[in-house]
Structure formats: structure tokens, C-alpha cells
Amino acid sequence: MVFNPFQENTYILYDETKECIIVDAGCNGAAEIDALVNFIDSKGLKPVKLVNTHCHVDHVLGISALVKKYNIPFEAHEKEIPYLEIAVTNGKVYGFVVEQPPMPTKTIKDGDVVKFGNSELKVFDVPGHSFGSVALYSEPDNFVIVGDVLFKGSIGRTDLLGGDYDQLMKSIFGKLMVLDGGTIVFPGHGPETNIGSELVSNPFLT
Image: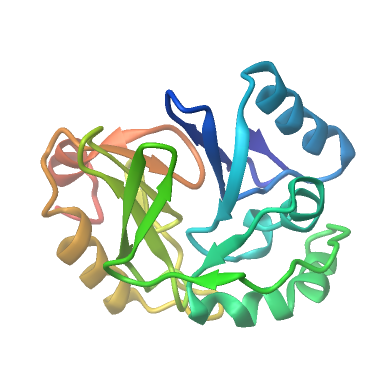
């Protein structure tokens, strides 16, 4: 689902058990929260946790409301906590009214596994766009959710707090470009792509 003026991608992942996780809840305001809740209700899903690839303000706008509604845990990398601490102030800069997001119930890091239903996602540390960006990789289903680290034909910006170009490129080549070329890439903004396409056509990587 695409939310807020930054056109941020929020992902709802579920399997045959109907348990689901919400990744990067960027829903801004009541109408967008309702759209997400209505989708969950229409599919008969049971949310079990919120997970963030990173915690820039456009990716956390819905977290507080959803934690309250579903009484579920919120997981993110420990190094993302500084962004949560400044979310309200940072939101004002971009014209968002932000309800203070909670701190993570559990922190996640490289090598951890995010579980829901019968599914598992492996956590990769991919810093460079932010202090503690992570990617979520499903080997059985051959996809990876990368947040704002990699896009179709582009890479994440590195001019914000925690940005580091050299570190970003190390993350991309060391953790993402080593995956199978057919691995589908779901970014934090814009359309999906795949690892093989980006290796040969992304001007930042060739």
C-alpha cells in the first residue's frame, strides 16, 4: 500500500495461517490508517507485529496508532531509535502531524529471523541510508524488502542524518547483489525490481 505525500510503500505480509506483519507503516492520518485496517479486515488477517526497515519519519507515521489498535510489538534496529526520538519534531519540518512512535519492543539485527505464521524473514544489516537500516529476505519466496537502500534504477540518499555513501554501497554489494538474480526487490518507494536487473542497468551500480 502506498501512503503519505512521500509515496511510501507499506507492506502487509501474510501466509496461509492468516497471521500478518506490517512492514514500514507509513500511513498518515485517519483515512490512510482506515485503508490499511480495512484491507486487513477484508482478508481476515491477524496482525502479530510491526517491523521497520528503518525509522525515517515517512516510514513510521502509522506505528503509534497501529500498536494501540492491535496491541502488537514493534521491531526495528537499535540504531534507529534516534530517528524515533525526533519523529515529532522532524515531522513538523515536512508538514506531518506525528503521534510519538513507541520505542521498539524488540530490536533486530543482522542474522535475526522475523517470524509470523509459517513464514520467516532473515534480517540483513544494510546501513548507509540510515544508521540501522535492515533488509528482510525470504529465501523460499525469493524476495527481499529493502527499505530505502535500493530502488529501481537508483539507490538511497545519503545526505540525511546517518547517511554514508561508502557504507551504503558496501551494504548493497555485500548483502543484496550477492542474492540470486531473480530475487524480487521491494523498495520503500516506487516500483519493484529484481537483483539481476539492477546489476546490469542501475547506473549507480554499473
